[in-house]
Figure 1: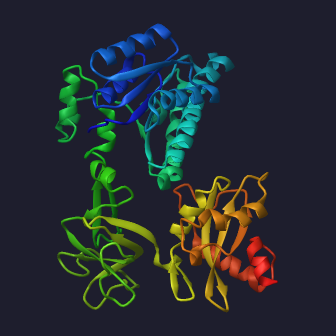
Figure 2: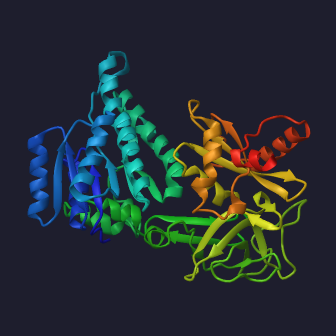
Figure 3: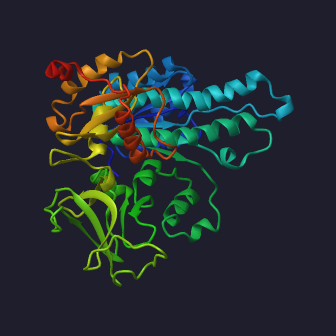
Length: 447
């Protein structure tokens, strides 16, 4: 993988695994900010990278505080003009048993590992979102965080917390095309040597070479699948492919066929949105059988999972929304996910869920439920969303009413029950409940 032109920050990279990560990133063309608390150690690491033909600078600061995190991001931007990759590796140990561990020992490990990962990721995410070109954030976990280890209460808590934060960040930053991964370093064994895609990396370890972490996280060993539980069909995409087709869920596999159908039942043109259908190579119904229910199957055997999507010119599938969530406004189809992605980019909006509310004139109107900070002026946000979306969405897709909440509406996996939210609010409308905030232009129009 060629990382020429990319800029990376690696915390705790003066020695050990951190240095291995920084060295490999530089070898592949990235400019690297090396971080350590010891200036001599950091300078030695930079010297080793530059003598090998790489580009690196040192930033000596103890990871943990917001100021330290910002200093690392600022150094990358000041020296190289941007930030594309963050590897959260910095850490310390203060091992002792539970009954002997002091508050200071616990806090020191939590501050460096957990808080440091949080502050550095937050600073990096803000910068990457401003750049608008995506990014990669890699956080280092540990087997101790997954299964525990004697004498490491603080370390186990920190490493388990990191993995939990990564799962959340991966959902929150996906729309900005910023991927967030956690790695849990483990030992190479005779068993792992039998796994085909691991074998080349085992050989590198035997030779004493550092593992190319960015290549592993962005390469073929990682894959994403999309399909139904009933196995009517599935798409697959590798890490390398995803980098070239960001946001895609891949190409159809070898066991089935895929097509996108429009409302008229005919296949849509490349790039156009429609309903996704699968057909197993062995024929309709060959992969499952329902008891007491019927699948959504066309007479020709093709089946829908109820999802909306499109295919690009290379045959890669991109998901839109669930068909049941689609808003039909005056005969025009509006997909909530598209509107949510645009509204969530607003600097005052933490998250957004869009539903269609019944309307006697248009059938449905777009209603946005916004999660805002309690101190934010909700009416000002509602008034300004139209102008914010002017260059992003067609006018008919803009939310026409708003509702403010101060807690997220999505579950731990990032999903939202739109049907429940929509029906609940339709009931409120019948009760003449006052829950909607109308933008100023709407009031003016009504008058």
